[in-house]
Structure formats: structure tokens, C-alpha cells
Length: 101
Image (cartoon, rainbow, N blue to C red; front, side, top):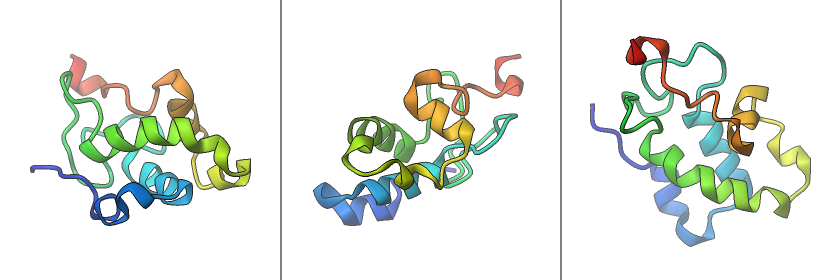
């Protein structure tokens, strides 16, 4: 399967809001451990060279920079694991154990 950028991100373009970024991150970052073999949002297969899907690769740095633009309630849709990953602990987007064996 060939993963592409989520259409919602492409449609919003430079006008993407923090709320949209949160929704995209929630959809494209695994919510719980163990990490699945593919992105839950687009099916991108995780690998050593591509541990994030294309959408998560674009959204993560944007949301990390912009998350303080709105109140902390905007991040409520994220699971604790997704929030940890967003803030730098890279747990939910680590490679699944099956890939690293």
C-alpha cells in the first residue's frame, strides 16, 4: 500500500488549525502499545527508514510548535501515548517489535 498525505491536510494547506493538526495526529499516530505494523490512519507500513507515515511526519513538527497557540484542552483527544510521542518521547511511533527482530 502506498501511503499519501491525508487529504484533510492538503485541503487546509497553510490555513491548517491546531485543532485539525490534533485530529490528524490522533488519526495517524498509534494510540496504544504495542505499536502496530502499519499506520492506523493510512496503512503506511512502518520500517526502519520510515517509522512515521507521511501525514504524521508533516503533522508532528507543526503540532509540536503550535500546540501552545490554544489551551491545553485542544490536546484532550490525544491518548497519553500520543501526547508523550508528540512532546518528544517517541514511544508510539517507535518501530514495532516485529520489524526490529
